[in-house]
Amino acid sequence: MTTERRIGEICEFLRTHVCGDIELKKPNDDAANEVVWVNPSVCGVYVPRAPGEDGWLSPTPCVIVAPIRDTRQRDGGVLTIRLLAMTWDPGTREERGAGNVTDMALEIDREGWRGLYAFMERIQAALAARATIGDMEIGYPMEASLFGDGEAVPDLRPYYLGMIDLPMRYASVPRRNQIRRDLME
Image (tube, rainbow, N blue to C red; front, top):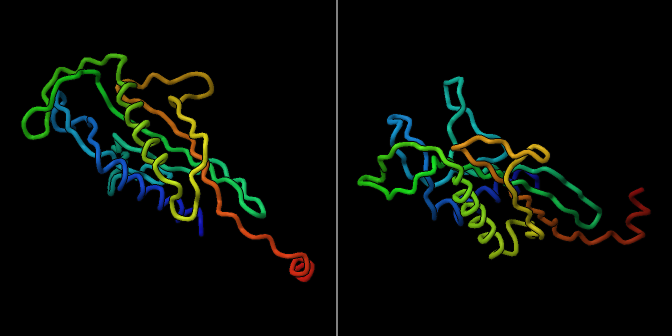
């Protein structure tokens, strides 16, 4: 099985078992003082470009699934996947209005990380409830943190970025016996 197919299986798992069950805030492009509640999207490796435009398709909120390390060995190995979670939260805690839209004054505070961590913990809980995805075993430890460049966490408020590094173990492959190895060399 290829890495491409494994990334697709992880994306499908997240769509089905995490992102379809929750709604997070998204800025309303048509009205600056409104928030729309949506299911997070899932992107494999890169955020897609909007068709026919120069700009990026706004994926917020989303989780991006990307391979960062592949340590294959003769009889196994680990493919480390980075799940980059992105949320948008201007900091207000008002209830939803009619029609799934909330009117509010956008006052940016420093508390949007709370929604990001709730999203990331939901992802980790769904992964912990499973033993495998496709032909890969979910490994441990899952390491979660705010996204940062080295030691610095960029201040992108009201956007918040976090990451989960997830080791996925290859299924063990039985070693060839010595006679077959000698014949193949």
